[in-house]
Image (tube, one colour):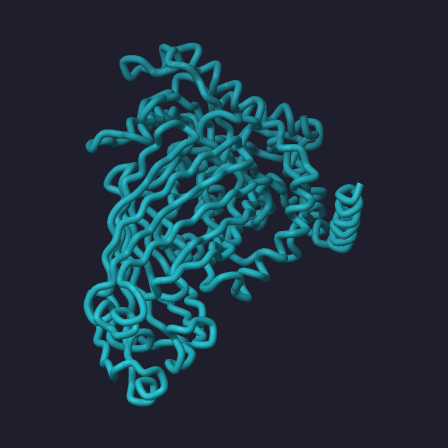
Length: 251
Length: 302
């Protein structure tokens, strides 16, 4: 009972803080309320990275395998469009996907602050038509995968320990919303982890899988189960993430 | 994207039952959160949601999204002061905050607090700082007559390199800005073995170099101190300060709870080992045993 009392007090404080900060939402919500037409850009699914982590050999480099034929970006645009259609007028846009996929964070973190958001310039120069109210940009995100290693985008981690090993699929992406006239960033959010109690906990959607999901012969496009598992990760996380961003109804 | 807006506090304290102000503040600050966390069933859902901050810093990633807070408490059985032959148990609060899902980087028991501003994954570097508690002569009879040494803050930088996932080499170079004004360099190497996904064992050698200013503050004895303490005058110079070995075991019981234990042994070298404070009243063999448990929970910022 005492615990419940403490919790109630703390919740009351949190509520008071929340109410007091309601004004802070106004700017973001106001900018979103003004948005009628939206274009969606996706540059996540051109390649799959296969990473060995944990107890690895000395010569351990990531493998990058082409999966463009899976059409994941088209799928993302379609699913995001469906989710956003309830609130916005989603219009098709054309863009140079490779330009968006090539952007990576600088490992020198202060440089990322100095250079600003590189996707802002791309939306200005690589997307047509211009003049929509907002552009939703979905690109690869990065996560630590144990000591000394990062993974990004679509991939599979082969994690080895002394006594056991497991494979873990990931679909790491982040969503930006740019205002269509000024190209100011309205909102940016990375897709959050799904409930995955086993395996590594990555900073985005992931799930452990068995060895039948491994991309055999370096041709992942032939593994339909692999594709289905990645599509499942994207589908489950996309609606939640767009909902968290107040762009679509959650779930 | 792993935006490392990350802070960590693991503050071993000197002397039995003594807690530094910073550590105490962190611990007290964690209490309401701990109460709330323990009321909450362990699940992947965020414990609570906070409103977005009223402003965002230009260029920095917005804090919106899920975050993981780790809080806990440990103990450290360690020498009463560097060079002492007596040890005592001290509390060690644990607090860290990071993006939800991001894996905690490997952290050695002797690592200073640090932030990686340069982060290639396999190579990380950035500023580092260490708080060294004050040494009060009234707390320990061996120090009678030597006077107090103020708490020291050492600021500098670190570099760590992972040639493979399971091996880390780390170097720190710090300059004392309060307490002492010497230079300290720490070197360590750790083999990190994931025995099972939840169990990790690590360990390796350590080496510390200190300048004359950093050594003399704690091991030198001037004429006044000699007269007051009964120890001979001793002029401590810098150089190789200590060599040792350390090991750590960490076990994650479930996504929320983790327990750990570590042992660090160092043997004082050079003028530190030859100081009368050590040879007549202390010991060059310094062993620290630590243990603790931590609880992690998520919260969300709108």
